[in-house]
Length: 170
Image (cartoon, rainbow, N blue to C red; front, side, top):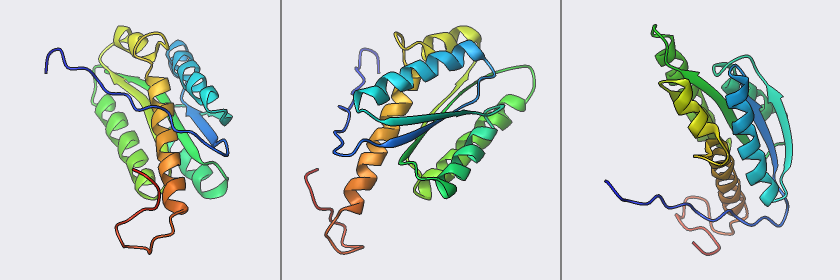
């Protein structure tokens, strides 16, 4: 709808700073750098403890997050990268499969902010990656932090499992 504003939730407050892993595919190194800068700026606002790893491409991002989710002690994960449409169906394959894998990890309980850009051209990517522009890296970090806060809230619930009620305010 034209003229509608986007609502952005305030960042959650943490008694214990979250430990977050940024997994970035720096195939387009300048775009990846902007995404990482935006994510790190948001994470700094909540004093998160941050680690970062690089993988070759967007298809490897979910695998790296899956390994860390199962074998390490991170509270949340941020998936960063960029896929620019080309002349073949490779674009759809990479976009669909990386997104599906991240969603499946999320359903398993991984708190993931998905900042893998899927764009038509480099100009769109630059605007979306720019921390002073659309700041999709910062948005992915915020999403991961909200999920971490929600997971902690549910984990500290005193209600019975399956009751449909969670302790604390909404």
